[in-house]
Image (cartoon, rainbow, N blue to C red):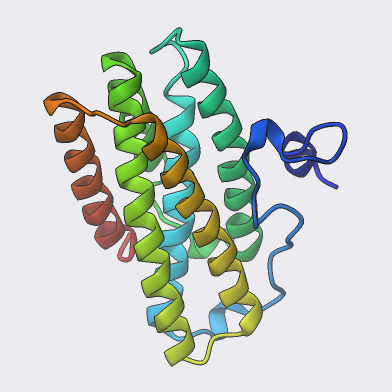
Amino acid sequence: MGQDEAAAHGGDGSPYSGFPSDAVGLTAPDIDVDALPPALRRELRASHVGETVAVALYDGVAGASRDPDLLTFARSHRTVEAVHLRLWSDLLPPGRRSRILPVWRAAGRLMGWLPARVGPEAFYAVVGAVESWVDGHYAGQIALSRRLGAPEALIALMQACREDEARHSRDAGRLACRPGVVARLLAALAVAGSRAGVAVARRL
């Protein structure tokens, strides 16, 4: 069990802080990425960017909030996102990754810092909305992968990540039960930014 997997589980093997992960325990599929159709390679690059942003989002909470529940939530969910990022990094050769990863990391940190600074309700609203959108995005990637005849191991990786993101959305949704106007605005902006970011990541 690697460092990320160990962090994602308690000493008795139970999921860390009550947040299980379908991706923990997986390894990146052994496939030739260069042999995949260009459209699918673009999607893999976008997935790597998305998980880079997700890890940075939870990193951005540091220094923005002192709420103990929010900080616990961020730490536990970051652990799962770090597993995702490791899997996509193991799969995708450096030459196939986005050329502007520092920009994505900065954007992710801001996406986490700003709502956490506003307050827990805003942070949970942003996470819930973004993760719900990512769930749908992964669903689209899975459908495309099946149409293009992608290896089943790659589709299984996408599906595992999708299940985790859907779980994260539900976790946040239960906590953001009554988001105010500012929280809803930040959530809408985060989703719009995520949609635009995917379009850029497919090209850069």
